[in-house]
Length: 85
Image (cartoon, rainbow, N blue to C red; front, side):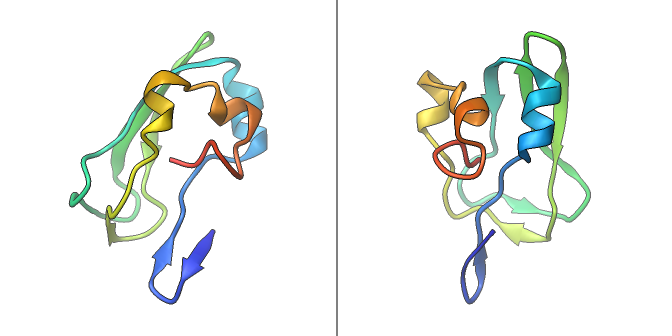
């Protein structure tokens, strides 16, 4: 989701979170990390599987969702809002 002229918010789709099942852990990159489109930048662990996260664009990480450390279920309950990555 575009959040400004040169920034985007990344997450997973509602379809993807449903297919994953209950998310129990999210691994995200550090702020300042340079990402390349199509390359893995983290992972999501659920009750069904462990899945890599792939960068949709080439960019620099300017923020990560720290709330996911203590509440990874936000990816399931609000993938387009509070469950952003």
